[in-house]
Image (tube, rainbow, N blue to C red):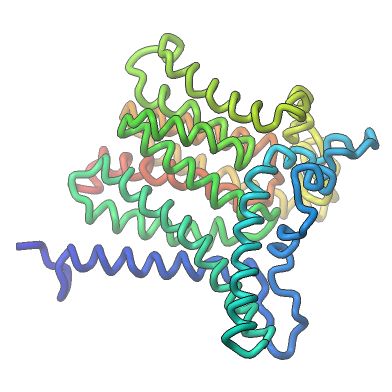
Length: 370
């Protein structure tokens, strides 16, 4: 007989939690795309519609984001590096364009041509689109955590709590933007860690191919397999070189005409300005006003120190936990060098890594009993 939790079995409670999380993920994106009412201007999803222009192509994208800017002062702006993401942006743009085209024709043919209702319907489809990928992150987070647990139900409850908090307190922070990148790169990070733990090289290799096309930091995923599975020195592990080579080759093939830009450290944001956003280097160099220093220190706590506290408090001598901790540390260093201080949303990337890290720490200290 299955264990009972309250008035339902553990199996039923698991299904209920999965269902409620799917609904939560499907509705979460609604705050990111403005949905009009009768009393507001019709400017819904302008960010999405801008990706569906007829002249939207690789070349036009590069021009829009500053790739062809000749001004030396603007040559390596934050936007310039997005030229590497053209394939992802265009693919997503075509998906959104299809959604809008189909819904436009559907409403024009079968319903009254009510722009408000039609746009709300389109917004719901976009929410569901992102919600599916958010749910994929959650699902594989549970599978990763279950890898270290003898009780799948406990792993599910633990991940449910962590993921719900992460959605609203990390991904829900809009500062700095990048919502679409954060969601999809986190999908690949979660899959990369799962396939590394389960030693599924073919699937992992596919992740390594596509991850850097979402965002340049996707290349970091290519070190997961060798780091997680090496029993001795990773230097002698051939996977240490094979999978990063696959990732770099993927990026070079797709972006062969802009790959030389990576030789300039400012391309990724190192030591460079990021417009209105405050970086750690602005703080070090005293480029922000005294009135903003206090706010910057608060953001440093939320963006870095709190994660360092988690790494310290839950640290044990577990070998796999140490390796996951190294990966988390790499991401934190990359964030420090290349992202604004207040861009907390991008920290969502490390949640699929931090969750099993904390779980292992609790299990090793006997706080969680399997």
